[in-house]
Image 1 (tube, rainbow, N blue to C red):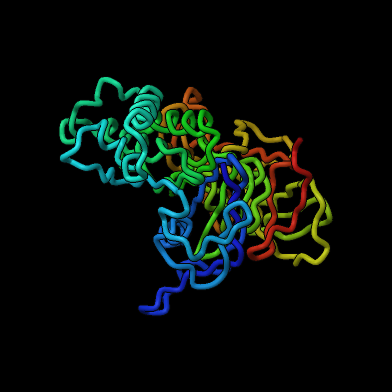
Image 2 (cartoon, rainbow, N blue to C red; image 1 turned 45 degrees about the horizontal axis):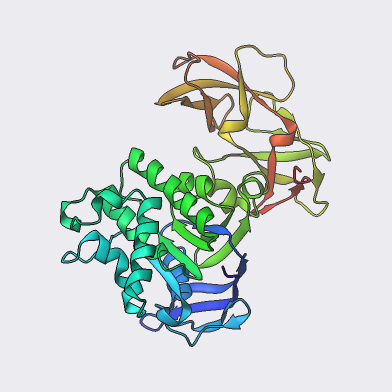
Length: 369
């Protein structure tokens, strides 16, 4: 479909001199499904609107297949958009809502009918073609909105949190349909969301934005195991990564001085020789083992303070034994029984430890192949 290049793009809003996007550069590959993820106000929507041509680019270039398109409007760029609000034409039936962008381009009646019925079959909308939006459920209206966005085979499809307001069952269904459409049409798709589960289940790669700047771009595996900075490490993953103060002991281990008996944790990887002695250790809740007895290496003593049942898992909040009593969260199988006040030992595998000197990671490991 199309390769898209963002070259040092800025968006500065004149009123208040607010920076919406700062020096943003990355490439969206041909036929890639790219998710843009980040907290509110991070620059996601500004980026999407510049891609669509709905916002002027203050500085920098946007190129589709090598051609700079800064000067082109939305229609000239051949992009399609679907938003959280369905934006359907209430006076038109489903068929005419889907057909609208095709008719606007002057397509012949027979070709319009062929394309509308083709996309309606893909999205299971054939029984609804004669109905009006007001008579449809939310999930049905969203499918109509997606059909209208995809029907004309755009160079680039832009989806701005299109299912964030739906219940969990509908979201799972529409996610599957969006990915199926993407693959069926060999499309280039950009999906903006604040929901990590959506991004992980849909995307080939993720872009993480924060405070108007690019933090990292990569596959889910790259971002999960090799975060570019402490913000990315804390933002990606639910529950969030645990952070504890540590002191470098040697090139393969750290001590946790605020835990009883100055617990020693070994780690694996190449340590940045310029890092400070005082570091922060990062451990994901999903990658911590729970033991009911001591005596194993790389363990930390703690006490259960809170249990949160979340379906297949239970999230334990534990207090580390020591003067500062740091809290740590651990995700365990819901079938395992634990109780508040129980004493446990947390086991941390050396290859799962992250180390940070301030904001920057200082422990490098090879990507898994």
